[in-house]
Length: 231
Image: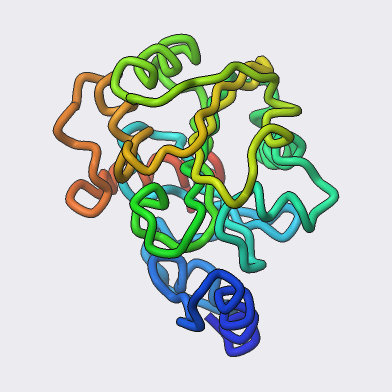
């Protein structure tokens, strides 16, 4: 990560109660001019100042990660300084991948502070896109309700972030059909909540932790499916 971005992080994080520069999981992904990166740090495209890459720990293929270059603790915070809404961002990404007509589920773990377990150990906004997953959004939402001891609210995807405060931790998931569900003040759910949901839905309940199970075969499949077999 270059010095300019580090400086911006220092300023931003000071407002959140720390001056600690943030490197972490996305340092290589966000570093300009990076070569010979690992497959999950490969930038596939960039939209509205956000990089799109495969996801380390892809339990299923065609799983994308979206990370803004500008400092933000969550996408509710990112949205406050960007004209593009999150749903519009997702549609723009899908259009660039020629997957706009596919069935899609996207989700975010939204921490409210540095070091939160909700952020899955990553103190930088990021969200996930699942393209044609082997389960429906209704299944995804039902399993989230089953294992998450929080109050879920229904909303339209286009307006769900209107109901989310950047200063409160949250979980949000939505579909390309415009359905969305979200929960606020969710510190009790712990780390990688939606990964646990997905692992349950595909009968791999013990393989949800990206730190232990990188699922690199699915990372490579995502790259091949999006940019071709010669990637």
